[in-house]
Image (cartoon, rainbow, N blue to C red; front, side, top):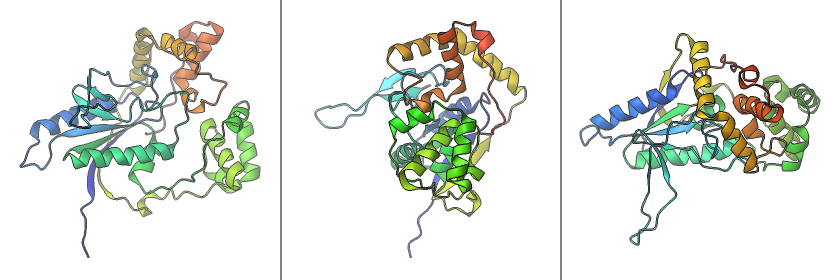
Length: 299
């Protein structure tokens, strides 16, 4: 029986404002500098595992790394070009700016594109560096998690988004008590998705969250960050984003037709965007409305 070597990947996790993106670029540059025929690698590329950075136009609020150049792939001898690729500090980043904020993008969509990106990077003898981001998306990509193939129900999402997280949770407890035991009762986006699946197939299939029991085809080097003075770092970063024009960015999204009352749950679930929307809607002072987000979740 032929044994295949596990694909090597690096995964960087940590709380918001912990410096994951900077470390990812630093490691990618180091690997690129020492890469060559003797090492077996020709460099490294980064896969952003962030459920918000996939959306175009949501740049400042999601903390995307600065795009400093555009490069293209030649698809044929005639020189036809593919969509522009995302580079920062001359390191290619995958899964940034891949979808319109008017469209629904699920964890299943992310898993497919993420696995495709890993294979593409490794086929070119480079090291994939996974930078998160969104913990559930990292788990979906690294471990063999399968998800029900239920398409989005935009009308149902619109109606469910009009009620509170508490009401959604109570509804879920009645319809699927088992799923209610494992879900975050305050995460409105996941509550709506659970109810959407129940509406389609009757109940939410159980996910195996005992990750040590799951198979993974990757040889993973995990790097976890937990810096000191995290609240101070978050406040400084939030102030910087406001100065960079985060409120103006939200205004542009509204003008482009992205509506909070539509089915864009995935977009407006971001605390920074929700709070900035309040600034635009109520014309309150920015610093009185925006709050430092909860940082207790490790990812």
